[in-house]
Amino acid sequence: MKLKREINLEDHNVPTNILDGIIDIHIHTAPDVRLRIQNDIEAAKSAKDAQMAGIVIKSHTEPTSGRAKMATTISNFRVYGGVVLNHSVGGLNPAAVNSCADMGGKFVWFPTISAPSIEIDWKKIEEIIHVVAENDMVLLTGHLKPDNILDLIDMSRSMGLQKLVVNHPLTRVVNATLDEQLEMSRHAYLEHCFVACMKLHDNLDPALIKDSIKKVGAKRCIMSTDFGQIHNPKPVDGMKMYISTLQEHGIKNSEIHSMTVDNPKKLIE
Image (cartoon, rainbow, N blue to C red; front, side, top):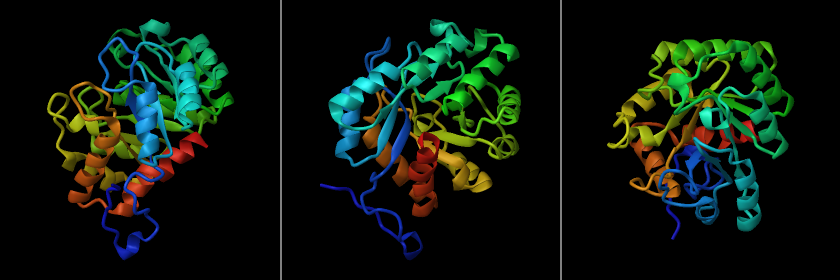
């Protein structure tokens, strides 16, 4: 049974199926060093059944480019992968990004779990940006702090890189102010992850996400779940919950469509 959502006249272009055409750019799947609620294939099939358009699988410890190819073939559904530049792949390692590109990887995340112990090396970062831009990949800021994020955005733009995403700016690991988020959003999308609102994570008030969306505009934001943890719902169910939560906080269906369909599609095209 399909879950329907109410559509206002101003939202007449929003599909009646709540997940139709959505791309979740942040899902954690098995195999992994941590327990995950679904593996790559299961997550892909769940998203396909929900009539989504694609998912992005992410691992903090290994590239997911090859896994995404296999999941796409088996499920007949579009799965995207990439690499997170943590210690397990050599940190800020241009060779890891080259390898990811050669495997068809689309997403390159700056360090996440290794962020506190990886020294910022702008020469290596310049090499990484070059590879990302040359291969039409997406650069995401991981767990960098606001000052470094803003510097990274400036360098990326000066080198002609168009596809930039600031990961979960409201979480403790980033903790960007609204003014910083507004500045970041001039040249990058802000990705707001629903996992931050979960009690076992940041326990973030969804009203803060609503405030950020209203501050910078839905056309500069992306909604993703960052789900896959064994103690949270499956990503597909998490996205339904996320949409319902933001609707309750006054976010329009047209804005949700921008953040879940239009903006992710622009990154992947």
